[in-house]
Length: 158
Image 1 (cartoon, rainbow, N blue to C red):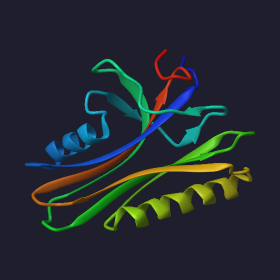
Image 2 (image 1 turned 90 degrees about the vertical axis):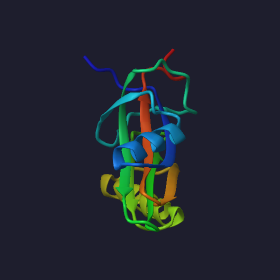
Image 3 (image 1 turned 135 degrees about the horizontal axis):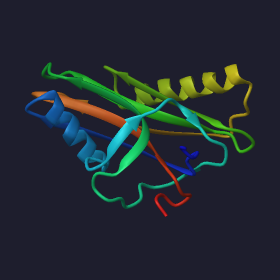
């Protein structure tokens, strides 16, 4: 049976490549997670989950993640991805993701607003919002990603 995660890391990056898939790989490299296999999950942060820096991990590790990804091939196009975590010290939290053709700051503001709404509709007290985002201007094929990775222990893997 799956256990609730004890920690989460937020990362973001962008990259350029000869194809959208290569750009995605470069964006994952930029974020520091190109050698992780992640499974997309929905957006609830378990109670008492710590937000930590990206811990060391072995290549090929399978990790649950919430992520935002945008790619494009139109030269000069601006793309951005953001992820936001809403933390409640007395309950569970919410993670929201957003992608857009806007500057990073606008995408981050939108995801922050989404987190606030997620808390309002659940009737939860919001203590903190943590946001990570990336922006990219496409040359050939570009990608921006923002990812929340769940870890089994308070310090990551151990």
